[in-house]
Amino acid sequence: MMRSNSPAIRRLALILLLALAGTAQAQKFLVPMDQSQKDHLKAYGVAFGALRQNVTVEWLLNYRGGSFLMDATPRLVRDAQVKGVTTEPVDAATLADILATIESGNMDIVMLEKAPRIAVYSPPNKQPWDDAVTMVLTYAEVPYTTIYDEEVLGNDLGKFDWLHLHHEDFTGQRGKFWNVYRNASWYIEQEQGFLAMTQKFGYPSVPAMKGAVAWAIRGFVAKGGFLFAMCSATDTWDIALAAQGLDIVDIPFDGSPPDPDGESRLDFSKGVIFENYQLYSDPAIYEYSTIDIPNSAFPAVSTAENDYFTLFEFAAKYDPVPTMLTQSHVGVIKGFMGQTTNFRRSVLKKSVVILGEREESEEVRYVHGNLGRGSITLLGGHDPEDYTHAVGDPPTNLALHPNSPGYRLILNNILFPAARKKERKT
Image (cartoon, rainbow, N blue to C red; front, side, top):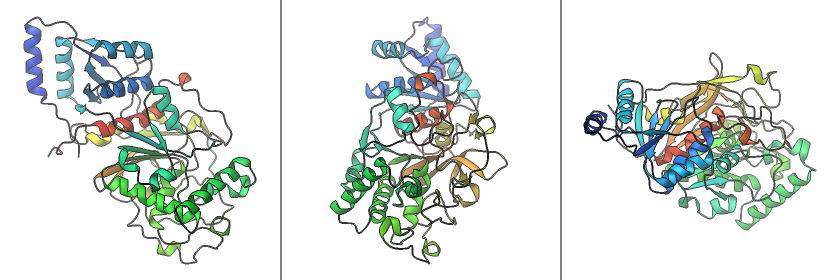
């Protein structure tokens, strides 16, 4: 586990001595992450840029929305100014006040030391939808590498620390778009790509190939990788793991009907987050299982005005991991739909940590779990600033949403692997 490495009392004493000695010149600067911040999203880019320059970043958990403290090098100061990110100079006296506030409250300091190597799992061909993670990484100016089935099956995952999965179907059912879009040019192009990859690696079907990809990703996590997934990649990855060696798909996807006993033979121990769900194998139903709530094929009537979820508040000094993942300048976040929008509470494994939920309901939006030496974080929904985001909608202009709390959750996850690992407090 990770924990704070800040000996706050000793640091406070040292800073107070420096302050008394008259050392007032600012040597650090604060990137506030409360409502005073002009561009929360680009602020993560400043922190990530500091890590790439081998500058340690102190993540002040629960302090003013999860602010960042770092050395005020000329390059970093200029980078923040160019990006339009709000900063505040920190002299010795100010630093002493910050440390005292953190020590006395539900706050802590986590040291971020090394920029993680980021990979985004995304097909090389054009898709009729956008990936919220690639959009926000681009906007925040955080570098990443795009990989897909060929790289995963070619054992390239070991080159990365953090992997993102978005609107992807690891069960091999082509995103359950067959009923409506099977004659669309993008669907046909995607199908050709899947078949070519299946043939290249010698798998008997696309579902078998996608299942192998899912299993390789599982191995990446078990060896210490960090996985973040949204939309349909959240549940289809876990379903594909539990269905290893089973035929759970219908004729349009592999030329044969599903195993009539396939659902009863699912091995939930191979999955990581979910268990005891039921499958939808009908190719005409735009849904995979009872994990998703509300059901995408028969969604409940809702509007953006009454859809929201609440972030849990964790004890920063004792639970730094979920605290990092839930840093925000607001505690209630507006909802956004996806093929997978929420996770049904009753099918979550007991080991899963709930990070965000719709209170007094079965709907859980944001969860975290562990596997081996690695971890998995799942966020339901497709685009935090586009409530429905239908196929073919234009991409979101993040310059219009620089303070998006939903997009902040994504960026919390890219910094999580940079935290220094320590023994958990007892």
